[in-house]
Amino acid sequence: MTSRVILISPAMSVALREARFDDGCPLEDGGAARARSAAGLLPRAARELTGPGVRCRQTASALGLDAEKAPGLAGLDVGRWRGRTLAEVSAAEPEAVAGWLSDPAAAPHGGESVREFCGRIANWLTQAGSFTGRTVAVVEPDVVRAVTVRVLGAPEAAFWRIDVPPLHAVGFSGRAGRWNLTPGRPLDPPHDH
Image (tube, rainbow, N blue to C red):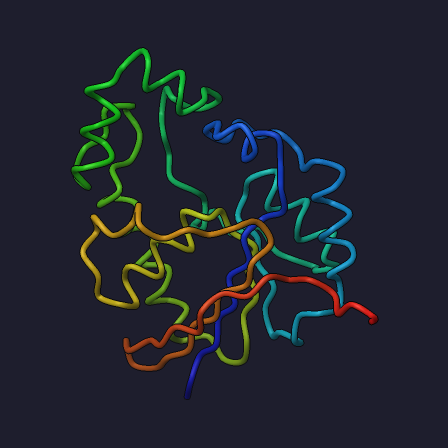
C-alpha cells in the first residue's frame, strides 16, 4: 500500500513577509484571498490536517478544507525568539544566530534544535506511512523542509537550503519507510487567456 501526502505551506502573513518568527499573527488579506481562489484545486483526500498555527488553520479554512488540527505538525519551536524578526535577533545575538544556522544540534533560543525538530517530524512521517488514501496537510514551511530532508536522506544542515514559498504544494509518496518526493508547485487557479 502506497501512502500519499501533500504538504501545503500557508499563505502570506505579516510575520512571513517581515521574516519574523511566527507569533500567531493572521494571514494578510491578499494571502487569504489567494488561498480562497485556490480552493478546489487540491485532489480529494481521505484525511485533511493542519498544523496548529494560526496561519496554517486560516489557510486550510480558506482552501475549503475540513482539516483536523495535528499538534505533531507544529513548526519549529524557536523559544524566546518567537515574535522577533531575524534581523533583530541577528543584531542582538549574532553568534547565537550563526551557530543556530550552522549547527543542527544548536538551540540557543531555548526551543528545539533543527535536529530535534527533524526527528519529531520524522516520527510523524513514520506514522503517515501507515495512512491509507491521500493526506493533505497545511503546515509551516519548516515542516516541509524537515520532511524533505528526511525523505531525501539529506544531512540536517540541508534544512536551511530548501526554500518553501507561500501556498505551495509538495507531494510525498511511499511505503515501508521509503518515500519519494514530488517537487512543489504553486496553488494558483488556471488563468483564462
